[in-house]
Length: 380
Image (cartoon, rainbow, N blue to C red; front, side, top):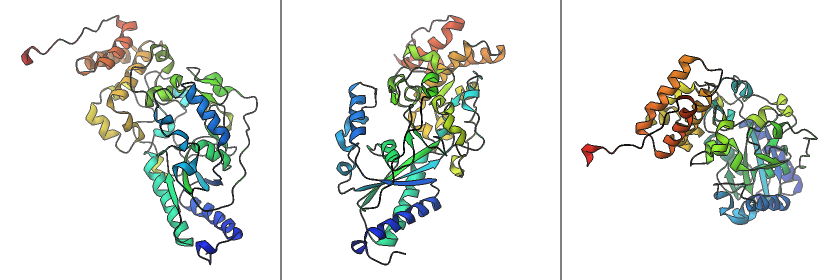
């Protein structure tokens, strides 16, 4: 217990507090904690260049807040330090994402979304950590973030020593790979900072080589407009024709660059029950998911990160995956017939955007043409 009030703490006290914060964070389920200052000048330069090149696609929120994203003290006045944490999310029984690519009738969901949505869980845990600090030293200024504001979380985590940003732009850790979430506490406490992590990617370019859409356009630079995670999650309109075949059976996100990374042989599976696999998301059959109506989707995805993309985008992703499955040579005739029937049955109730995707999915197989919807005569 720190014997002094906040205004009486000296550098040794803050060093001891930093050690206690790490211990408390571990008790709240975080696997690692680091502390950094707010200097992100180089990352700000890279961010501005990335935005200037249009690599953010439709994510206009990436540039909406100006320099607040790269200058923490502009977002939260008085911020001197950022407490950065990580939490493992890979479920113990998760299927191998690369092996699922060989099962075209099966949908692939990014491993981070197999369990409960992490945002609220981590935010509550970070709030508990902040409360613990406050109980020890008295009131202090802070704000908790988990993907909830313009924060350069990977850059801050790198400076805090949690890992380095790999060539695929994800954070990598030598003993934990990359299957983890990040969160932050912005604070005015003058805590001692950790040593920034160094890059250990070396000459490896496996993540660049495996990317199905060549979205990693240069080491450490991803063009979101080509990225399957962006196309299936953030992008709300039609999926560009040039990327549909490359999407394969990925129906929410893409983990190829992480799955191929050699550092993930050191990854730890999550001990957090909330991240356990939600049935049937680990290796769901496309035919089963195509049978869901909107109410079923909302029910099944309650508390899931997937729910936020909405039912139309979910169906769009399924239709693209079904079209790719129908074009595969590894699909049994019964499954093929069932998928074709399901796609045709979607037509009367689907939007113009979705029907265009259905037409694309069916045309290589049945060469059918979708006629415009006839008006409801009884309604005229």
